[in-house]
Image 1 (cartoon, rainbow, N blue to C red):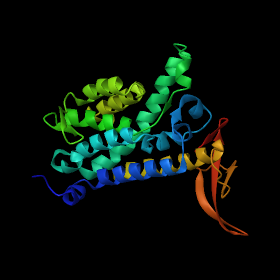
Image 2: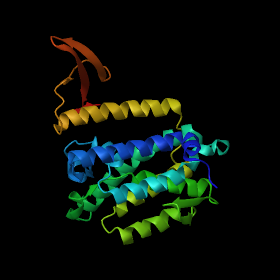
Image 3: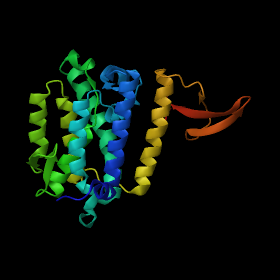
Image 4: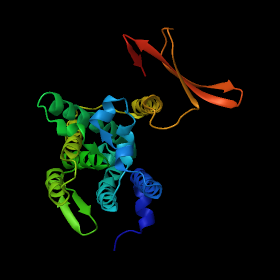
Length: 271
């Protein structure tokens, strides 16, 4: 007989929080009738400055089947949090989850760019990606390299050898879910191998917090500049003083306002 769910949650705190967040976002999307085009990542949207979609697309799911499949796989992959003696553990899981979210999204856009401009495949301008699959496939790959004897359990009854799980799942999802993003899943696998083989390494709490801080700044800045949502409480100004961008509260007649300043460098704003 397995452990009670409560104890498993305590053993996988980061995984449990991510699953809870994704489920809460799915519920909100369903309640508000939000479509994937409002939160998903597409090439044209990124070109227009909607960089915030790299984050929103990763944590958003439109269909319940999509959500259940990703969260079931993620729960099984939470074993990474219990492998602290192997150099993994909770901190490793959180630090490289951030890396997987950001870099897999950037890689997807890079692949789209090559296909559109080098091979003239205009179809990928209209493709909108959504879901946590990139990160799930990234962790499958990392675990396949770090702990090849592990098993990936899906839905509580399907068990796959983790060493073959990334490509088995890539083929499996492409067959049963034709609209699944093959390139999105492949991007997660590529970034996963880069992490597992040490191409991307050296992540620690300091760099993770620094990276998270810049992600938040770029997220807010691009959300404001894109005009996708009404953020009237934000003021964005360009300055000529040679200093780094700053984010602060300033007093106004109605209370406190969040103000962001950005420095133009060579015709582009450094954010």
